[in-house]
Figure 1: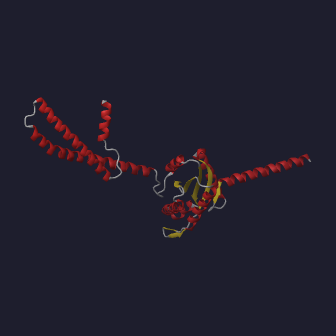
Figure 2 (figure 1 turned 90 degrees about the vertical axis):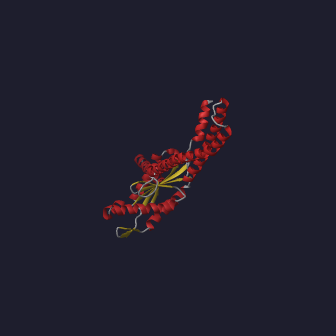
Figure 3 (figure 1 turned 45 degrees about the vertical axis):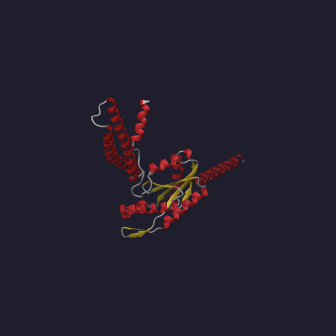
Amino acid sequence: MISKTNEWMIGQLSLGEFSSRKAVFSRSVWMAAKIAAFAYLLNVLSHFGLVALGLLPYDLAPALVIATVLTPPVSFIVALLAYSVVGFAVYDLGVSRQRFEELSRTDMLSGLMNRRAFLDAFEKSRGPVSLLLFDIDRFKAVNDSLGHKAGDDVIVTVAAVMAAAVKGRGVLSRIGGEEFAVLLSGVAPQDAMQLADEVRARVAEVSIGTVGRVFSVTVSGGLTDATADRGFSEIFSDADMALYHAKATGRNRIVHAASLSSAAGDRNRQQAGLSDTAVMLRRA
């Protein structure tokens, strides 16, 4: 009984969390009103108790008038001030914590989610997914010839173009350096390939003005389709291999990991066919 009473009192007096400063004030007013009512009730009961024991040194009626006039407003004001101070402190702490959490999940240069946040998004995905990896072509040459300021401007511009293209269709992240990743859930493979090529084309069309120069860049991409239960590392490896192939075969293009598997299968079948022919020739 005592434990339940304590829980009830804590529930009545605790402030909880707040969505806005207005919510803090509203909650404080409500809590102050409850405390004022509780204080007034205790005051009245105390007077009746003193009367019953014959200890009240003055008449009950004027005492109750004084209690009614003074106790509720005084206790309300004190409680309102106390709860408002504590409530605003709790609210500010919550805002700071939320802001810190956002910063810990955001890439500061591009404004996109970082690798940690992207991995969390992948872990929450279910069913078929497509993973796109993009890498800015010849990015090192930009840094070496124009400086890191130009390199940063390139990353910011490319990130903005990609965000506009992917908006509402997938999760975009800068996962490191000049590399970006897009996670698509429940998207048909042909639609994923179409989006990848749309991103590539949009980046190639944009002119970047920085450090007194105007130029454009391109991106290469690797795409793979899989189920989320395969694990991020395995899926990432497939997309990364496709990206490497896109780089090695001319850049500014998208390669699907499935095409690499098909090509490898064709080579294996071709080699097997040559081996069978060689065996037949030797037997002849």
